Image (cartoon, rainbow, N blue to C red):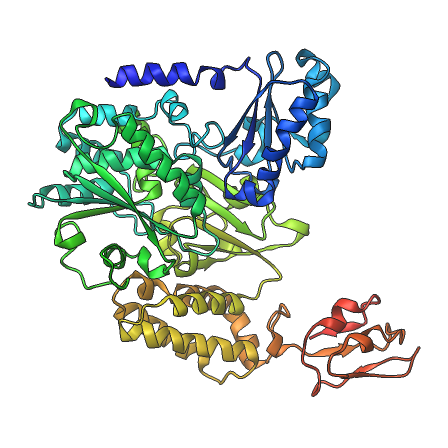
Length: 613
């Protein structure tokens, strides 16, 4: 079957789904939607539709990126604009359906205002969409991720068909001209990486997709695989053709069961359509893909550790050179790209390098997906041109900080990244500018913090993560991260010593300089950036034995304000150590030597008499 015939078949099969006049119901059913109750909606819909006498197609779609509004439901009718409903529950479902469809489709908007029953403004008009340019996420929420016809009907596999009609070297040149850089963290030029592997002489080569997303607060790769798995698969096939690989692996963590399920279906569908397997589209090029489930080791995100894991060995990095492009999986030339890098390729090859370079900066081309998490109004997944400022991302797209609190920091690049302060809020987010600030792009996690966040405790949290995830192979990382964590823990407990701050700086630079892989080389970044931008907080902890945000329990001191204490004894009843004493209707006191700082009294007092200092 030719690709034109495949396209015609797919467009015919998915005609009603994309027909704007065909009634249908779309439910956001990625992990975020399912966690919020999407499966309950899918289970309740048939009964409600039957009760209303409606025969309407129901489809699951991927993540629109509006994770803070899940579960989402989009209604379409024959004569009225679609409506998107947020935070839908089975209890509200009947009223929404009856109002939208029950009075005649043409009267839908007349009977329910645009905000009735939790309806949102049109998707394109949502504030979170302003400033976004959707390339990787172009199909999110627009297709059923388990239906390959939907993907093909939206120009899916067109880039592969074009690539197969070109010499492999020209495909590589196209990618180089586009300036696509690896979206997994290091930002190495993708085309150059492919060229190294293409030129390596071997009868056997491998193409690897790194889907081992392990950063706390990051969910970009998971969203791509759950919402549009064929985009990554198509990019992987294009890359395999370019470097001359016949076999490939998708290394995905087992904690992503939905992503794995949809990948398995995508691989079978692509094979059935002749777009994967032997003699793809009659080109003579053959490529086969297997899924390798990872056990969740953060270090396996490093290329050589990942390869060791696929080979059945313990996931530990090795020295380079040789680089994987010359000696990778089973000693053969191997290329490794992450999910988002590969998902860019179908559009890049379909539209050409010039269209790709329309977004981004001269050195950081294209768009980048980011996971917005933490103290931010609109949590979710976004995609913006590289070079977009932090202010635009956090305040215009993300909606700013909730509860009117002040912005304090944003952690970029996960546990290996750095914390960026408010005075750098106009910083353009690209590879070079983030590096200048002491941070990294990473895979794209953005954790926002407000004024109530203790930056010393943040550094301790991320060091605790990287120290546990260190494979222990090299001494600087194994012992250095442990020493940093011990010092940070002592500071947050009030057991620090003069000189601890400078000692941490010394150890951090030693760990960065001496570690074998990227985990150790970047693990001290949270320490270095928080000391650089928030040294006054460290000094308060060390010199004054005080946590300015009252976060670190070891530095808290609970007292009672006699002017506001009514002697109600509520705090006495909840204190587990009987540290609070006093007569009823008289001011109470707290024995600081007995107090274990459990915070029960503070949470119980209705008169704001408990003070934390």
